[in-house]
Structures are given as structure tokens and as C-alpha cells.
Image (cartoon, rainbow, N blue to C red; front, top):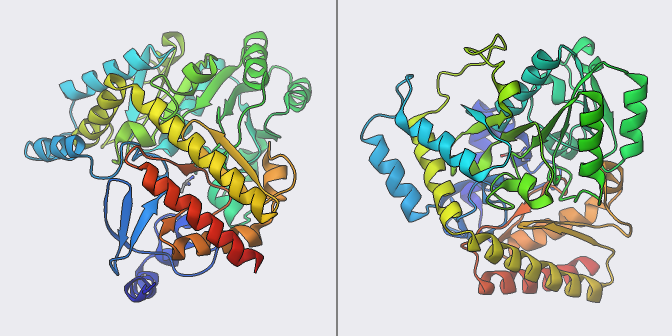
Length: 430
Ligand code: HOZ
């Protein structure tokens, strides 16, 4: 595969952009090689600067659930752009977006739009602290809630990919209030509670983890967290930046049948534009300024282009819930057939799948938390990643990221992916 232009662009990018990329995982650091520079995408396919075509399993890390350049979404953006791209004043569109989200997501009385998942989680945490008057919070090892200081402790995603243990610039004072324990370990949560009685404002969790590969909650884990939060007067925050409107029309809350007090969104709700949101119960949300004193603001919050892209995407999902069934069927088909070809290869593997999120860990034991995800064979992942890329299948360039299926993928694309895996595993086994 000729990637001369990507090589040239990467070298040029490094002269002006740190590491040549605007988000670390894109740099291919843990898998090696040159990141591909993308020139366009349509449906399920990405095209790089050299004109190579790839089947896309990243979907912009989740947002492009309908496929790239979806006609209705593109048209809506074009029409809105004619009326200006930003006003810095309220619009009816923001109300429509809030009403649409409220009509889809359980437990959302009020919702505030922001511009990224990071902002959404950061603001939800501040709100939980302001509401409870407590400072500490619990997050789970390997869960990633964006790059606000408080969350950069034992975080997954890019930090796990780059093996960054502590982040210079995050002060000890901030990190001291971040308590961590293993995902799926209720006993560890109870221990933290006992050690920090009446000091914990919030528990934040990815209801289906997607930043250490895909990891499902064990039966009873989310329900147990809900119970603890009720008993201890703790705000339960679902970080649905990945799962929101990806797993169902009501997100993970609906899919897992567990209520959160606050929910954060991103990715899908922006339809590919930079959008985040946090919302939840009125009694908590009414503490946000200008209703209350918990300050939070943004010049581009509720930006009309972002709103119309997200609104159009969500409306399509709401009106066509069969999309979720189709996505789930496609992902299950992929999982079952990957399972078959991995078994034949005799290479140890674990495939975790939930809805349209899936990932492969090269491991001989179950992957249920960050420790089990980290002990998988990253060298094999790296070889698999490159073998697939050379066959035109674009997987996330890190074993610590979930794959996201988009609904433009056809059975033919998935069959090709399975064949490519079969060939890649033969190549790896040598
Ligand atoms: N942290 C993002 C996925 N979990 C990666 C985004 C990117 O590098 O573009």
C-alpha cells in the first residue's frame, strides 16, 4: 500500500503540531508506523491522502453511527451555515435539541450543551461537588472521562496507550480528591467509602467501558453502585459520552435499566461536530448558573451548526430505532465470526462486545477491568492492527480503545473484515 503522501504530511505536521497530531492516540505511537492522513470519508469508508480506501471501525471514535457524510446531516449543516455559524445568543434550535434529548433519555429534566465530552464530565463533577458540598469522587481505573485535571488519574484511552502513569501539571492537591478502584469491583468501592466517610460527592463510571478496549459491566455492578449512591447521598454520574445514543435510543441507562443522577453525553449527540452535554435531575441541575452558583459557560455552547448536526442525527435514530437492532446484529455477526477465525488460529484472544461496541484483546483470560486489559499481549495487537490496515481495514490504533460500528457497514464489508482477520492471523502466526 502506497502511503507516501501520509508520510510526507506526518513529517510536515510535526513541524507545527505537537507530535504531528491534535489528539495523542492518532499518532500510532503504541502500534508504530505512520498515521494515515484522511482526505475524505463516505458511508463506512475512509480515504487517505494517497487515495487508499479503508473500512472504518473507528467512526470518529463513536460519533459517525450513521456512517460518514450522511446525506440528511450534511444537508442540514449546509442549510444552517447559510444563516451564520455562531451567534453567542440563544436559539430555538437549542430548545429543540434539549427537548429531543429529554424525550429520548431517561432521568434528564434539564440539560446543558457544551462543546466536548471533556467539558461535559468536568462540569458534571463540579456540579456534583457544588450540590453535595463534598470534594472527593470515585472513578474507575481505565475509565477515561476526558482530560480535565481531576480525571487524569489511572485513566484509560490515550494515557493507557502511551503508558502515562502520572500527568505532570496535575497537582497533588487535585489528584488527592480523585479516588480510584478497579472496574467491576463493588467491594473496592465499599472500602473507599468506609475510608472516606461522608467525603464523596460523586461516583462517575462508563456504564460500558470503552477506553480500555470494550469492557462490559458484570451483572449487579451498576445496580450495586446505584444502591451505594442512594445510601450514601452520592451523585451517580453515568459518562455516556461513548454509550449515549449508541447503545439504544435511551443510551446505557435504558439498555442497562439503571438510573443515573447526572449523565454526560458527547460524540453521537454532535453528529460529528464538537458537542457535549450534561443533564439530569432538576434538583441537581438547578444549581448550575444562572439558576444557581455553580458556574459553567461556553462561547460556542449550543452552536447552531453543532446543534443541527446532532439534532438531525438523533432524530434519525429516534425515528428509526431498528438501526440499533441492525447495528447489534452486524456486531454480533462480526463477533461470532471473529471468534471462529481466532479459535482456528490458536492465538489466545478475548472478544468483548456490547451493542455496537466491540474489541479484541490478545489474552488467555477474561478481560473485565484495567489490570486484565493491560496484561494482554500488545505486541500481537500491534501486528494484527498493521496486518489489517495493510488489507484496508482501519481499526483503532490502540488495544485500549473500543471499535465502533457504523450502520453504513454492509455484510460484505464485515465478511471482508473476517477474511482479512483470517489472513492477518496466519501472517502473525508466521
Ligand atoms: N480519547 C479518544 C478516544 N477514546 C481518542 C480521540 C482521538 O485521538 O481522536
